[in-house]
Amino acid sequence: MGKVMSRKLKKLSHQYQFLKLELEEIDEELVEHDKLWASLFGKYFADKNSEMWVNEETGEMRKEKPGEELDSKIKKDATPTKIKKLYRKLSTFAHPDKGGNIEDFNDIRDYYEKNNLIELLKYASQFDLNYELEEEDHELLEMSCEKLRQHIRQKKSTMAWTYGTGNKNQKLGVIRTLEAYLGKKIERKDYPKELLED
Picture 1: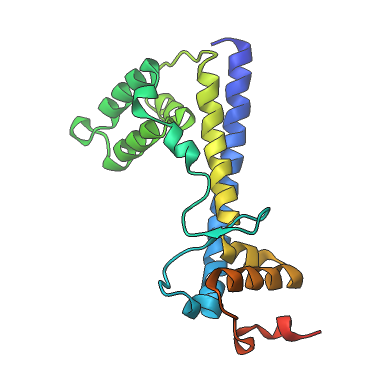
Picture 2: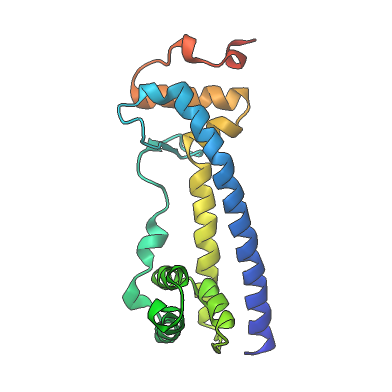
């Protein structure tokens, strides 16, 4: 592997780890925002377990997760032969019948299905397997980072996140958007006190 590719891998690997940590923090914070959202407005939804997504630019609300087009881009038949070979080697090392463990085996399969080359390379390093990184692999490395960015944007586009992290005006805006979506008013008694104060 050339110095340029080695630097690219290092840079993308650091970027990926940073995004992964950011996503974990957002997930933890979102649990609290979801609880608050459900306690305030859960009764207004027929399906109380449904999540609502809001496009901050357009104000559009929907139940489907935004940005799933990246997932649909990744097809197994589009997986490069080199990654298929790497996956076969890794799954042999990680297979429970060959002395591996089921968690690693399942993770490797999951990363392969998502074309997540960065995570597969970590396992390759763990099992002392060589993988010659080439220029065309760069796109897959970038895609792994982009998927994390997409998940971060997705979490931050939920109404619970927007409400939980917003200031007074943003929270009132979320309530107005919710009212427009539901076609009915949110009763003033359900507003938190801080939103009723002038």
